[in-house]
Image (cartoon, rainbow, N blue to C red):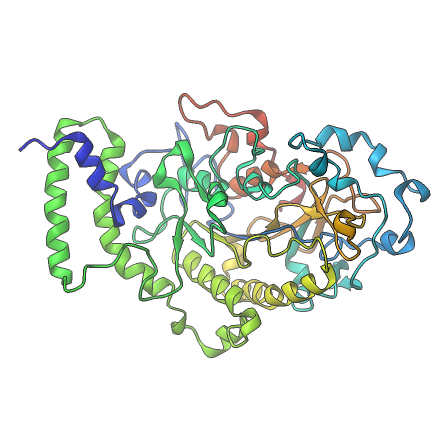
Length: 486
């Protein structure tokens, strides 16, 4: 019987097959990274990689760079004064303000980053470690590992609304054509380290339906999109359980029958490489049923390890579970783990910044410090890159909308992220914002510079990640932040 092509692909898209495509094309011998790849220990790459995997931690809402990793004494010195009354250069007169600024044409939004009345620091800070890097007192556990961190204090972006969450991961403003996310590009460019697990896993996200672009592959194809996993070992993959009453042997027989039907279609379309990959998806899905639950079964960890991540405390348990699972996943060969340890917009402190950041930092500080310590003691910090980021910073000026007196607004003009691990300098600070924390100084680093750097550490040249018919803009490629590399 001849199977209609439309029905065939519809069947393939259902259930586990749709989630199992992420590790297939490279295994079919299709090199996505290079026309003539070089081969390191990790698979096909453009050059020998420094890192095997990435743990990408994203805090939704925009944490204040001043009250976290870029303290600014001048905010206290000139608190209550307007920018034009201080002896410092007025940041609103800087050409950087107009060079990098871009938003939708609404005055209510456009004026948001120019509040001129300086708001003082809401927490104290001090120098830590042999490197003497300054961090605020809201990070007592992470501060103990500051000599393992590499801070980039001159990041900038252009969207001053929360579509910046997508922009941070795709490199494109919401008014532009959408582009694949950084995790999807890593998935597209690299071979697999474990045939039984996806290459791109998402924990805790996407935070809302409108932030799906942050994990999406778009024109690369759905097989490169991030696969959200639950941390319930009994049901980590949505729609990936056997039917009630179906035995393992019965399911295996079902997959074998589907495989035979797929093979018949492959005879009709012998040049369809994606079809060949999809034919193998059922086999991968079958293997994932055993590998994924084991990978996210945190009960296998020692009591000491679970305590290290804060699993014994309600405040730190959510982030702790996600970060411990991230370690287990990269340990088992997952290439890119994207972690959302906070709810959508949680760090968006328009009001009550001191209360919000005090509480939120306490939910993240211990677990992320535990991750760094755990990776280091297991020798994984030499193979894994950790990225800790948010979509933008907060304004040096007091937010005045609605009679505000206790918060800061969105601020894409300059903010801080940090990295740690394979191929990166440790105890190092790169770049700076001005004395008020307003502008990223010098050229600064647009978000795709971070993308290019992470891909470089994985052995991929972002400028060579092209597909026929899709010309990427120069801003999509970014430039590697060479100063932070060892």
